[in-house]
Image (cartoon, rainbow, N blue to C red; front, side, top):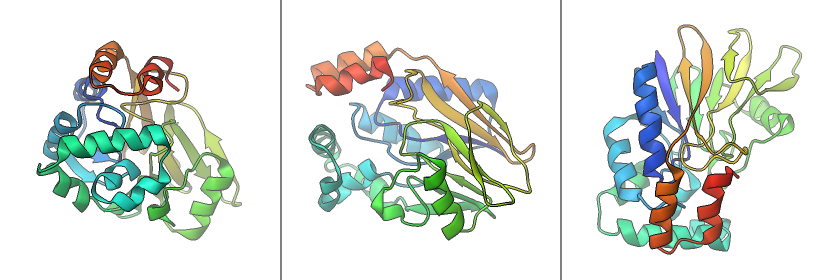
Length: 244
């Protein structure tokens, strides 16, 4: 099975379309979504319409749940909160509210392969897995062969070796070892934060046992123009160009 693995679209239709076009060229069987369809960007309806149509498996991100649960707003800074309130108004009285509400926090897509937005051990607390130490806690508290996650907006992989050591892997093509365990992040479609402003996604091939990260350029200026018209904070507009 070849899974298209996407995370953190953040209502950036321009990036989402570019990723789907590139993924179609590459070829895949099913789409896996790791959360945060909305927030920050200004095309929530358009992105959710595509996602509903194409997604095979998906989980909720913190921005998604904040749309349907006001209590989640306490997790956000002021700029992110403004974007959520704007998005909530845009989606009011649409079927997308129910779609976001129904997204689970975690899901096993096939035996041994689990998807989540933040962590498996405490998915409702929206913790970040950024370091080998963070990854080690997940490996030691929950059993899985492969965990796919998002939330950090940074493509990375962590490998759990036989002796319990966790190592980060930064290569774009990762040849997985069936005798080891992995935590894999495809990066962000709509708002990369690793200094590269190109949209990021991955293909997980469970037959060849390969996880490959792809980057694709997209017209971020078009998203910036729409955000400017909608009155988005300049910090959110500028970071699309910087990839931070």
